[in-house]
Image (cartoon, rainbow, N blue to C red; front, side, top):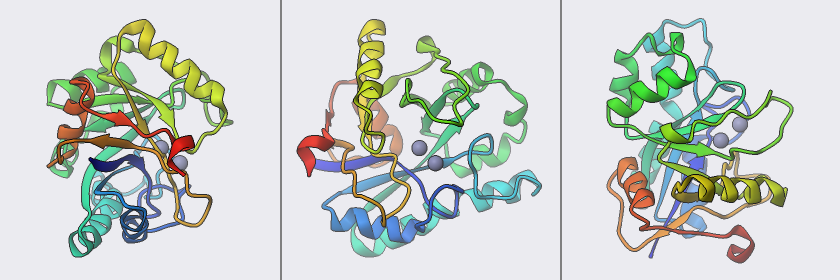
Length: 228
Ligand SMILES: [Zn+2]
Ligand SMILES: [Zn+2]
């Protein structure tokens, strides 16, 4: 089985992370993972990149965490894929399947509201996983859900350990018949190691492969309680 981490942050892209993309790649390789998907907080989330930059420069800075992780991953034998974590202050969405070029060209997406963005992204080939849908945190103003616009739900988030969050997320996914998946939401290599992510019998070639496997029921969620 191939082991993947599907939701992680880097210091280059996320203000709340303090490990570089290269360091995250090294950590996950050392922990036995075959691949990771870098999903830094986007422009509307806790980005580490100066929002006053022109859009293309902002995107270039935003993608550095992924690019540094990918470069190191290529050296050490870890597959590294690109995603984003889009957050509107209420809900967070992991967006897979679009690349740097797409974000560069779509310089008006921050004028869209959440629903408009999700519709546009999906129409361009994105897959959307709602991240930790019932987590509580000071920055979360409330929880908004749009089950008809997502492809799956992160029902196991390894770094937020209040069990009620995952229980609610599982109930939500079941209620709407949405596929379930898992991720660590790791922000650094220095705090407690959370484990988590998914196992797949097939190797992924891109982030969309992962999302398609979630939809097809082709992944096994790694329960962090069993993992370490
Ligand atoms: Zn964060
Ligand atoms: Zn996250």
